[in-house]
Amino acid sequence: MLRTDGNVILIGFMGCGKSSVGRKLAGLLAVPCLDTDALIEEQEKMTIREIFTRMGQAYFRDAETRAVRSLTGREGRYVLSVGGGLPLRAENREILRKLGTVVYLKASVQTLAERLARDTTRPLLQGEEPLEEKITRILSEREALYEEACSHVVLSDGKSVREVAQEIK
Ligand code: S3P
Image (cartoon, rainbow, N blue to C red; front, side, top):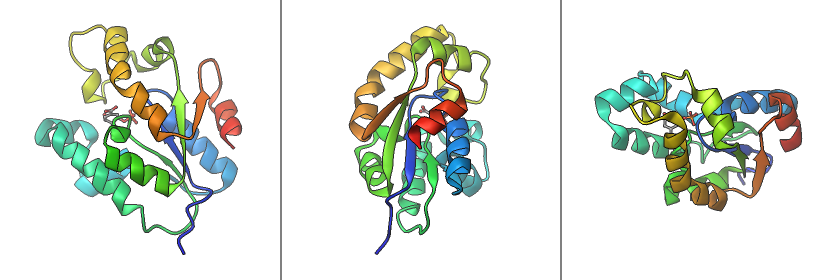
């Protein structure tokens, strides 16, 4: 039987630290670190930005579902960080819960805005709307789904990557 206990799945808003905490935690647990955005970029041979521009967001969302579905047969323990919008689909939330323990990395709007201030890689954050307002708006649409998808919430404000990873461990 496939063993998914021991896998840790990190969800949360862009900039909450999923990728850096995921890498640190994977190091502490001595397991591979996977990332759905990286899996999609590899599969599609395009960056996330290019996928949004050339193929559109709907295409990217389908690619996210394909990416998490592709992990359902994977053997061996791992840490997985997933794109901030992936838990929005009910099917994806169900798959994540089957893959392992889902941890929501929660950060305040202020922390997220500080970390994302100079980011140019995230299509959803581009545009004229002030960053804090944009984050507040998108987060308010997502927060309940992040809470629903996870079994644990870990706050990352004011903590180092190592501290957050240790706490999850
Ligand atoms: C997105 C988050 C990004 C990436 C894409 C869309 C989102 O991943 O998947 O830009 O909808 O929140 P990170 O959360 O790793 O930044």
